[in-house]
Image 1: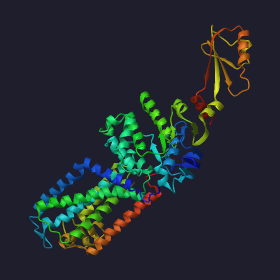
Image 2: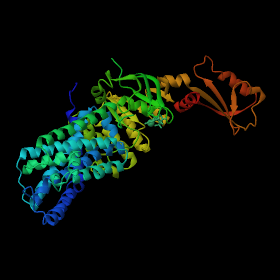
Image 3: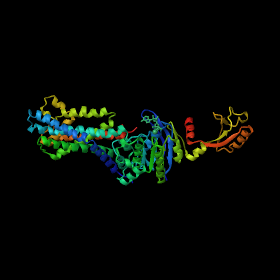
Image 4: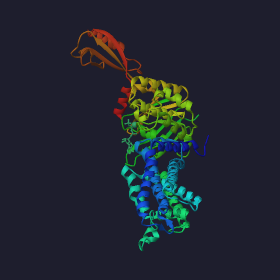
Length: 257
Length: 307
Ligand SMILES: Nc1ncnc2c1ncn2[C@@H]1O[C@H](COP(=O)(O)OP(=O)(O)OP(=O)(O)O)[C@@H](O)[C@H]1O
Ligand SMILES: [Mg+2]
């Protein structure tokens, strides 16, 4: 009876995490949708009345990919980090540690669930945006690819954060103090090409610029950086996160004494 | 047949530098109830956590059902159910939901019939729709037992299962443990209620300051280390032990109404006859005699003091 994989174990974690979303529906779905709507009212209506188009795209539509990314990134990190931090905090992690599940299966369960939620959320926000502005999607397959890759990478990042954090403050700090500012500075509401030098070059050190640019390209065929670079950066980011998670489990870091 | 668990030269030094286990070797037999006793901080939980994969050993090896706990962790762990000492439960879940998670984690397909059976055995069936945070402490403890049993383990660790459980339910719990043993499950438990170990266990291990100082059949341990006492109830109070009785190893109780004679059950002659003759000759009249066997608790206290 030597199973190569504990599929039941992986599934149990995934289902358990998905069930948790059901309970926190307000927090995980409703509140991001409300804040997106607020962004539309403030940015789309207020600013959009002054800036009509960016690179030929109506301003209201132009901010849609950036907004989806903003929500996708913060929610992926928050969801995934909480998912693993909470059992560590209350001690129920003992069961995961004593179960015949491999690190890979644990990561698939937790990160898969967090990414699923984020992808669903991204699509819900897209649908919400349609209520405000007509959005056309030039490359739907690429749009979904970016959505999935980003959700995965940032859920992994959240998972890492949840393993590393030793208090609730740290759990809050990363999304609030790092992800959100970088997203804002990464061209959520504008094209980085409008920035004067040297700021334009500085933004190239912001990894989120590549994600937002690539995602926007899949909608409107316009990009701040070449889409190939965006894909490469996304995959690189994913690979780095995977390597860190692998190292955590290999050493038992913050998991086992 | 291999042992259910084979622990060999196991040591654990925590990151703090504290050595919680010192060269522990222990074999647990299939189907036995093994009681691990020891004072607070002795290393009982550490030992259990190493076997279950929660704490990384510093040295030594452990096999469970013949499977190495590191190299072959899947096979080893899937045999084990663990009821931890700490009351750590998924506060927002219902008992069946958290049991389903446990069952899945241990690689078993869903089986509502088993969940129902275990919940009923632990008198939790009525609480199946309550969130765990709404349950009492004793009920939470039973939820942890239910989780451990949800995947039908062959080896069950109970780390202080009776802490905070009332007398009635404790009896039910021990009944359940006996039934599990009858069905072939190996059980390792720790407890601070030594009479519990005395009643339940087949073998007893005593651990103190990270060292396993005794492992013995319970009956054997009682026989080996057991002392019997003969208590002579007096008719009249004595203020001091009469001269004639000195040298018999007698002690007078504080109220002066009892003479206590401690003797070794293994000895060739117990010396009781000579003692009673001496008592009669000294003119001391007694109304009753009783004997008392020292309990496992007395033995345990004696061992730990020495250690
Ligand atoms: N994570 C840790 N880091 C450092 N020391 C630890 C850690 N966990 C336990 N210890 C120490 O190891 C020793 C053994 O602890 P353990 O929990 O195994 O004792 P125990 O026999 O189960 O005690 P109790 O009867 O109180 O449950 C204690 O001195 C404890 O302080
Ligand atoms: Mg303990």
